[in-house]
Length: 473
Image (cartoon, rainbow, N blue to C red; front, side, top):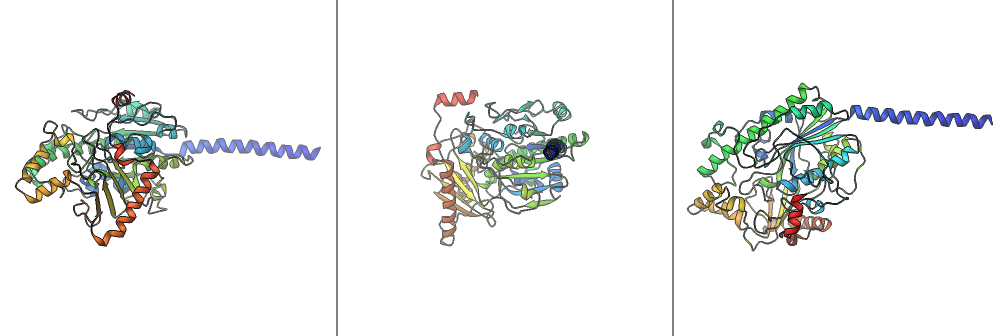
């Protein structure tokens, strides 16, 4: 009897200690887990950032983050347009899986699709968003707390913003918080900032651009909005410092996809698909570090879950890159993949891509058709840059080659990105690269099969009823 009483007492105290330990552990977790602030650009040519080697503008505030944290040199968006990229960022799923595989097509309204407010909310984080609100509907999939502060409409001619409500959110968050600050810069129209800061004659244009006076003039307007973006980053960082939250906050800068210029956004060349990411995390991420590890937007959610001490979610397409951040690994993925469906931005023109750190394969699934995009090829739609390219191409063979590169594409393109970062020398038919092309082709088609990606069949107009329903959600 005494033995039973004694053993029972031990079990009772062990149970009580265990419960108290768990409570104490939970308390420590809440105190020590970092806040997260993610600042995202809109249509940024990441190569223009001075910390990425840009020569046209000194982006001092973004550069300051890079000096304090890790710069990712192979951050890749899987579809180079706003809605799919943001849906992938928030859900951890590739476009074919979340359903937003065309621009302005909403994700599937399904109980099986969750996003960062669900995943981090379940782990005790307070998740909010201010600014551009693409991919925040339906609310059942994206239950963000929406905060006034930054302009939500990317085509607005002004980008006025206030930090007042954001400060209230930060100050009032009892739990760890995750805040998405979504800028509309430098999305067209390029109507904010001061273009006179930049001399058109002094600009260093990308080699895949046709050098015209119109291109140079318009690019000063684009750079003025990059300046506005950099100022916004500086203001958010200053706010965190003034509130005493900076040291306990992971600050992540994301570049989204490339610019609304020919060969940028709405393509799977690197000027559209390759992005930027900088992660500042005091005492965890080495200051001034860089990495060539391949990361995609789908990888952000799994990484945040691991940072928040949550369990991995097996159904996600993304993969945590926390080992890269902590210096335990120099590699995250073997490949990054890309999908492009041209509708509703132009006529059907499906493209797929796969890459590693050095090589990249693109497959144009309808090479017999011309590529057409209404935003810069239609004379009525802000097309002055493109028209200046076409006009110069009439008298310049080099200019015409760059124009035809956009409009007329082969079935396969293969590039050595180290030697040819602007993808101007197609090696797909070079016998030296025959085996590499075959290897990349196999990896791409295995991925498409895994995704349920039907290729050409996905680049078709949604039935009007479905598109109206999608836009209403």
